[in-house]
Length: 112
Length: 113
View 1 (cartoon, each protein chain N blue to C red):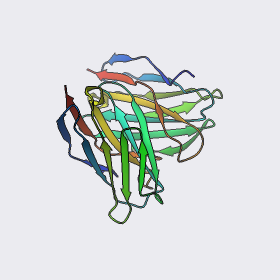
View 2 (cartoon, each protein chain N blue to C red):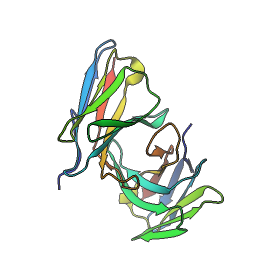
View 3 (cartoon, each protein chain N blue to C red):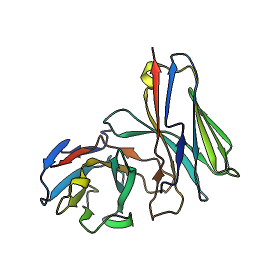
């Protein structure tokens, strides 16, 4: 099974609202990353947070990490229609020999 | 810098055939990873190459293979195609470190009929 699991699976909001997506994982990690994917395209790296960090900001993005609960959240503030995409968390936990294991993603729809 | 380039963009093959997908990484990136993306299974790791050596491998049958050339370009091959191999195949390159972000290409959409 996937190392990361996102919640919710789908989220629909209005432009200007904030969007929060959550990710849970199972094993110890060195870092956790968030990626975005527009339909039919490749993934784009958004932000990386290391296991010894609790919060990180990048523009309108805010990521938190709680290693005791093995969970992370991605907050997008003041959302725009262009933020419509799938968002994935990825961890470098030692499962299946993979360097990064991706969650199932949250489909975010921002309505104009 | 040019991004990761994957060719071809679309492929249609029939069961039993084989296919080769190509990936050109970002200049200076020596690590290339391959992922399979399907609606049912999500993103599944296939393998990772670094300096022409396979560094990691996911849980895929031996029909899936890959290689990396001295210029870091990579190819993956799928033999004896099955209907379930229909997917978006994504290649990603990165610098050497394990905390380096992955830079993805736009993928090859493979349809097996």
